[in-house]
Picture 1 (cartoon, rainbow, N blue to C red):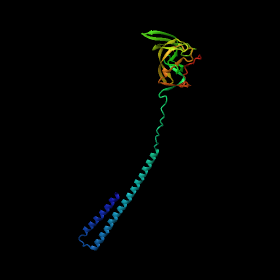
Picture 2: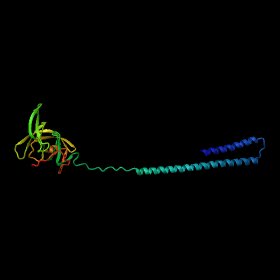
Picture 3: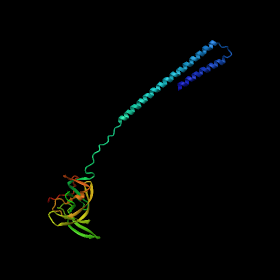
Picture 4: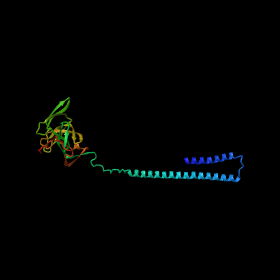
Length: 251
């Protein structure tokens, strides 16, 4: 643009000079041949100036074109690098649904914490038993505020340590018939809160003297229904607490 302005100024100066010369020399007779030669020379000069301006513009346009092409090349290279840097996201393989659904797994023997007696017990997980039972001694029934309650002793630290006495409201009574006895055993049932590893659950426990059995706590089918499945080939799937009651050696 600056070069165009210079060219136009030069052309204007030539034309103005011509006009001034003509005005100053007006009184002098003009030689037609000399005038024609002068005009031809001025025309040549003007055309030369215009050609120089056109050449300068062409060079400028060529330079701008090269710069634009270089910029386009750099942009394309950046786009290629950006596309190469994008890591494709692979969708995770969908695993088939678990055959046990949202139930948790139990072994044949587990360590179970009973909140009502503040103690953990080695526990038999028995799919053959319907109800769940806790080893309790000196079971005494009494009334409190018109409701049936029960007082009982539990060996929370094993049968080598003194038992502790607890009281709980009786939810109901259940009759359990032993295979070796024709008579049924009427037992009080209490509501209990259990913890097995990270799992927490509620269930009913009937109170019974289990001193002749190996494990002080037994969980039956009613507890496992809809919440757990049993792998009889494993024990203590959910770990064993250090304060757990030792298993009895009696059968």
